[in-house]
Every structure is written in C-alpha cells, then in structure tokens.
Length: 441
Image (cartoon, rainbow, N blue to C red; front, side, top):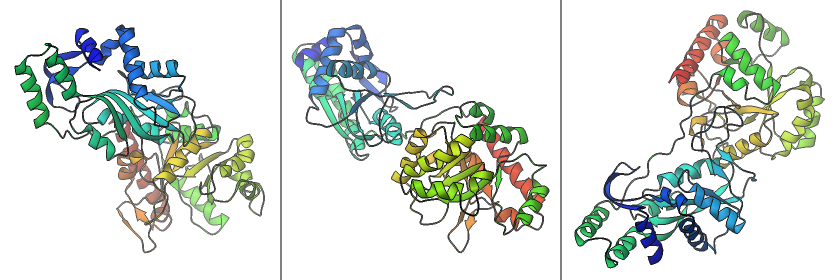
C-alpha cells in the first residue's frame, strides 16, 4: 500500500488545502482519483488491489459509481472477465430511458466499486436504482475510507464496506516518508476527529418531467401510446371507475361525462391466477373481455407467467396491461419486494405492460422509473380520508404532483355525486392542474 499511496501523492491525486466535499463539509485533504485515468499503471494497480480484497465475496456483476469509479470498474471487468453494468447518472428522456444499462436478470448480485467513501451517499445513490431493477446489492469496495461515518451509513442500508486504506493510514504513510509536515498532520487528524459522523444525504434521482405526448413516443405498446395521446388531446387524466350494475347505466354516465366519446375502456378485472387459467378467463367465459377491453390489470402473485398468459392473447390485438404494484386499502401486502418484482416484470414485458396501478410511485426505489410506464392511482377524493372498509383516499393534487402518479381513478366521488357531470369536471380540472404543476415544477 505504501507504494500506491506515494504514487497517488506524486501525481497530485492527494491534495491539501481547503476543499468542500459532497457532504457539504470543508476538508483540509482531498483525494482526486479522476487523475488516474491518465496513468494506466496506477489504474491497473488500484483495480487489481480492490478486486483482490473481495476475493471471498460472491457477486455476478460490478458497477462503478459514476464518474470516477467507472474506469476502475471497467478495468476490473476487462482484466478479470467479470460482467459489468452501468448506472446512468442522468437518465435520458429518449431511447430506453434506463437508469441501469447491461444484460442482467432479477435476483443476480452486484458489487459496487467506488474510489472513496465519506458519508456513503454516492454508493447509496448507485445502490438504489440497482436494487430497483431487481439486482441484489450487499457489498461495496472502495480504495479509501475517509472514516467519517460512511461504513456505518452503508451498513444500516444493508451494504458491507470493503476498504483498502483508511485515510489516517494514508496520512501516516505520507508523514513517515516526509511528504507531509507535522502541522498539516495535526490539522487533518483534528478534522477527522471532529467529523467522525457525516450523515448520508437523501438519495433521490431528479429527472425532467416529460409531457404525455413526449412519453407517448417512448411507449412500445399501441394502447399505451394511444392513452398518452388521448390524455394530451382531451387535457384530462381522469379515469372513471364506473361501479354500476348494468350496461345501460354505464352508457348513460358515458354520455354525460365523456364528451362524445374519445376514451379507452379499462376492465378492472385484477387477474390473479396462473398463465393458462387467465388466458381462458381473458379470451373466453361469458364476458369475452379480450373483445372489448382496451386495458386490463393483473396481480403478480402467481409470478411472471400471468403476464405471459395475458400477453399471448392481448398483444396481437394491441391491448395493454397494468400491473397492480401497490394498493390503496389499509393493511395491504402489495409493497416492498412485491412492488420491486412488479417493476422488473414490467421492464421485461414493456411491449405489453403499459404501466402500474400504484399509490405512491415517487417513493419507489430508484424513482422515477422509465417514463414509458403509466401510473394510475385509485382512492382519489377531493379530501383525504377513508371509508369503513379500509379504502384510503388522497386528493388529485397529492396523487399526481406529490406522489408521482399520472392518472386519478375516481369512483364514488363521481358516481354518487348529485351532479356526476359537474363532479367529473371538477376532478378533471384538479387532476390536469396537478399534472401541469408537476410538468412545470
């Protein structure tokens, strides 16, 4: 390690002065490993040292924290034939709009590679989208641990830190080799003693909000694309949950509120069985849902086979599927790993899955997700609250602007209103205003 520390000092990758770190604090010492890309022998030595330190750790992929650690991870991947995935620091609003690039499967594991750690924020910012895509992240390796709380912060988020050097060890080597005077040593040591617990910053990916028409161009499904276009054309993101008992009642409501009649039909069927069974339920039975429903939805409790079954019949007809990733009833179990699994299935079937039934997609790991997916939220009322059967209500503004949804699903707030047409108009105005506020925010 002594040789490597001296090489870093020689190429001015170790600097002393007054530097503001990402965590916001000012430090008398700064490690700038971006420089190593111009020194191939140093880059090779760093990558070899780091990967050797985790030889007893099992993982399928490596991922370098952008940008400094990308060349280190690339060197590790090429030299040791280890597959690599790449996190986009800025998610593009065109192409695939992926946060993580690479060829991987749900449940595989990934080692995060970073140059150094202070609070652990950068590692957590990379772990979040990796986990959101279904990869497991339990280990991170860094060259230098600044000993300022990063190890503890990562551990509390389920990540074990493997560090080659502690900052105090680096300072000690430089002092012993006459590269650092005693006064600067005291300044650095005092700084480390006074800043042992630097809190990790909240990790949130900020992406420019796209309009519905822009998102329509990203959709791989004709019904998903048409839904975006209709919302933009009608300036409405309202979905009526027409909880009525007869076709005559449905048509009467449609005449009153749908403005003759540019809308899609969403059958809230909530398929939940195995693939072969839902195929028959979708196409046959007494309802022949496939014949008239543009969109259906499904639970993923039976696994991805349910999507395969519905897709077999629906995709050739240009139909679309929403996955129930969350529910609006109190005490429901559609959360956490269940929601993550729904996201992964959607990505793997993005030609048929057009989005999700969700409650708070802004809180999902790695949010916001691919903008080609539509978010539709039930349980919307003009005021927050709930009913006696556990349904929880939120306002249109809260659902769209604060929670990251696109479509408000309203049932009783319109159906049971004294004037359904006027109630629908008010929901439409509030929902669209929230969408515009999110777009311009």
